[in-house]
Length: 72
Image 1 (cartoon, rainbow, N blue to C red):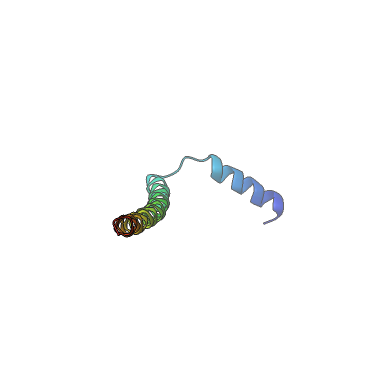
Image 2: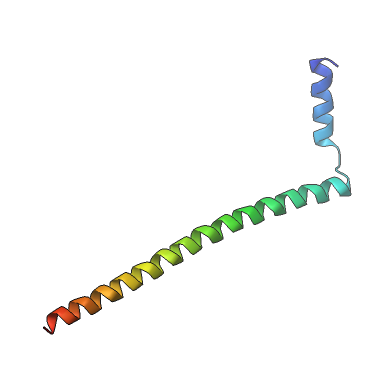
């Protein structure tokens, strides 16, 4: 096949109606990618939660230390 034939075949393939199997396979790939993106978001969000939990703990500890210092 030459370049022209390959191009015509490619365009025809783009324009033809997809089979139900092809449509389901495409949707499955999209769902897998969406899940991967959501998992990445969960990991990021969990790291922000962990960061703020540690920060709150550190700040509460610091407040207690400062209050004890004031009472001396």
